[in-house]
Length: 155
Image 1 (cartoon, helix red, strand yellow):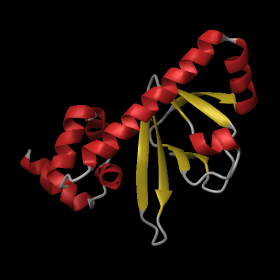
Image 2 (cartoon, helix red, strand yellow; image 1 turned 90 degrees about the vertical axis):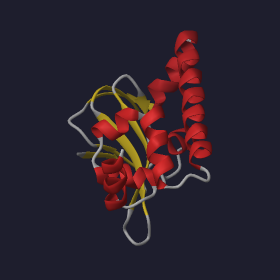
Image 3 (cartoon, helix red, strand yellow; image 1 turned 30 degrees about the horizontal axis):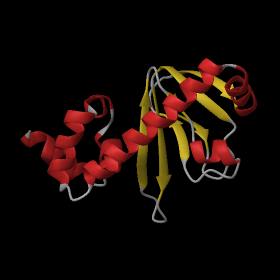
Image 4 (tube, helix red, strand yellow; image 1 turned 120 degrees about the horizontal axis):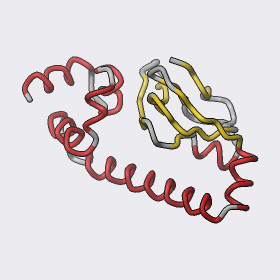
């Protein structure tokens, strides 16, 4: 595992994942990690608010598997957006897809108990359960690893 961006750094890179997995996460005041997003092969990932506004990130960016990443600097990224209409279209699609995934997760989890959250993940993002540790998956779902283990054993 490698930290690509610390909590208080300004994000200056966008990554494309050729192989592996990258997660965005935060730490609570009591030291508990909360995973916000996972990106796998064939996807782009960055700490977008910090990348866009060039202020300190409020999250960490970390590889969680042996990964092969392509890295593009913010300057080069926006140069491509400006100069290549196809790249600008790709960037728009990335933003739109990210928004849709985030909204589905937010709306999908509203009012769900722990069992319903796991079932939702099984139907919408099964790769998470297949590739992530119970600890990371539990931090994404907002439950303890032991609760997640109990639920998985019943399914």
